[in-house]
Image (cartoon, rainbow, N blue to C red):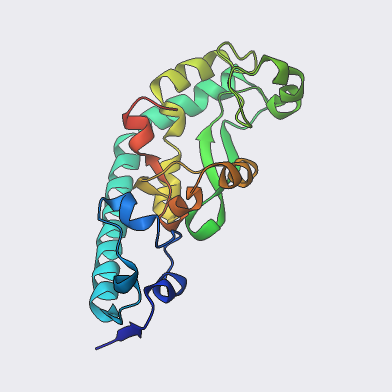
Length: 217
């Protein structure tokens, strides 16, 4: 039996991947804060059972992602082809598929796929629109963004632009359900401003998650 025995519970937090401090963790999960005597009491953990359950869970989760994303790609293939053609007609000369580098599990960078919803030179035009930003902080948000194409408005409203990420799920970069991935620039900003922000990178990012279900974008 694989076990870990430490004489000070604070050592345990240094040996695990959990990015939380002993003082904040109990309150975060609803437990009482342990006394000083409890913290310094010898602690024995059975790591073999924990690791086995973890491996089984992620194996089942990965198999589920592969099966469901494959079925979705087959079922939605007519819609994907029609959308591809519509973007190609609406924005001639631009690739209908937009790729952008995002931060995935354990901080690994990957290329995320989306249907193009903006003009090809959207990044260059962003500098001229920064004074119109409707949100505080590094994230740019504008209600009537002139960079969004005619087809792009419909794709964003219906979230069809996110469907190519099924290929990311099939590749293993993403999962069907999980926290949305951000671009490296925003991650660097958020990890300094939001406590425990980097904890989300311990799992694969997803096509949809808590924020999307609750109406956030």
